[in-house]
Amino acid sequence: MNIILLGPPGAGKGTQAHRLVAERGMVQLSTGDMLRAARTSGTEMGKQVAAVMDAGKLVTDEIVIGLIAEQLDSATDAGFIFDGFPRTLAQADALGELLESKGASLEAVVEMQVDDEALVARITGRFTCGECGEGYHDTFKTPAVENTCDNCGSVGSFKRRADDNEDALRTRLMAYYKDTSPLIGYYYAKNMLKRIDGLGEIDEVAGRISGALDG
Ligand code: ADP
Ligand code: ADP
Ligand code: ZN
Image 1 (cartoon, rainbow, N blue to C red):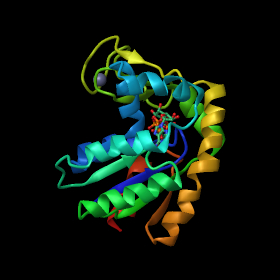
Image 2: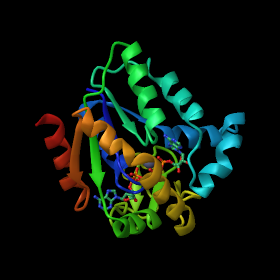
Image 3: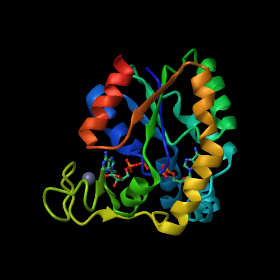
Image 4: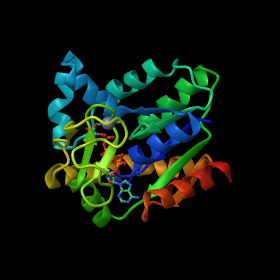
């Protein structure tokens, strides 16, 4: 089953994608993670997108569609989770064509609904493990042992994103409402949209997503 997790920055897409990977063996494809990896490894493309990302603006469709296209040959029986992609109508069209060319299809688009106030609280407290990518939060998801990753045990590897500040977040939210939210109507019209309440405990939200996928 191939699915999209759709929602504004901080909605919990990465957190829930990690759970689906662990519980169902699905493969997470996060364009945000791919772009950050390109920056870290210092590729030409990584250098090109750095300032755009730090400002909270969208990277060009051409770049992110290229990144996704490279990954679609990965073996997966359980399916892909598209996380943070597509973000524009052009990307949504491209994804449909790419999947079709592989004889695959999209089964569901889960829209995670979270209000702006909660998004700000989530984003400003977010940090992740630099070793394994596990996500944490200053208040809502703290590691069991200070400075130590619950998932991989690495010590002192936590990091915060340059674009998780109020200014860039405002730009990212506006990009979501302007360029990405039209996808809600796009997938609704294709009868693929599942809307879930993204507020509440991480476990509760996971239960709603499972219900939407299996129901
Ligand atoms: P978020 O936590 O806001 O959902 P992501 O990690 O998905 O953030 O993305 C971080 C940044 O990477 C975005 O603000 C944007 O600059 C760039 N980016 C990621 N995915 C896309 C995409 N599909 N299209 C355009 N830009 C993207
Ligand atoms: P996205 O990938 O949509 O940008 P993340 O999964 O990175 O969002 O979550 C943003 C922040 O909010 C992280 O610090 C994460 O630990 C936290 N978070 C995720 N889900 C919840 C939830 N249901 N309640 C409270 N905090 C959450
Ligand atoms: Zn870790």
